[in-house]
Image 1 (cartoon, rainbow, N blue to C red):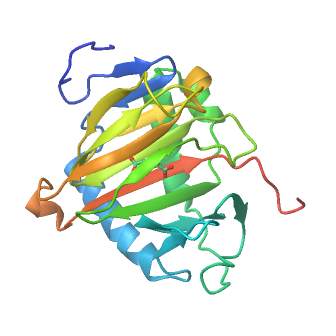
Image 2 (spheres, rainbow, N blue to C red):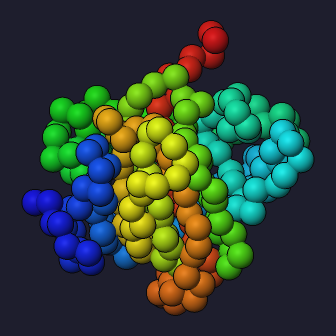
Length: 224
Ligand SMILES: O=C(O)CCC(=O)C(=O)O
């Protein structure tokens, strides 16, 4: 059921734009804890979590570690050439399966879920001052949906349009355990995290800050 209210109850879906679905409270607490523990492992290596350097000299305030394929502006590679050169960790099958379940449930479409084949995950960590500017996820050669899972502190997630980085956009509160999927006409929409709400994470999660995992299909093969 799609709920049009401002503060949807856990499990109720909202669709802020066509193809963009927010499912509050999708991950139960035990799955959130499992993901936080996994993120801690991935952050240690083989490629350590790092602040991504931008071509014009800026440095992103979030820290990122990638699975499957390494993203550095503005392409994917198997090795982390801007972070020690190691090969990135595999994307675990269980995480890809979680992505398939996310797509099936967000769109209420088991076939869309079964067809989803993410081959990369970007894990972003936000401390109290971190944010992410308006951008499109467009380095993938695929229009398969992006699956976003939020853990820890809540945040404002700004979800815009495919034409400009300005209005119209919708500000959505993403809390720990929330699922957000954007595909179809919203796949290449601009989006941002203008702020997090430090200290809002449930202490039982054992995470100070916010983690976000996005699953994507790169559309790439090792053959190039
Ligand atoms: O942290 C989020 O919720 C969004 C992350 C994001 O936009 C990205 O990784 O491209």
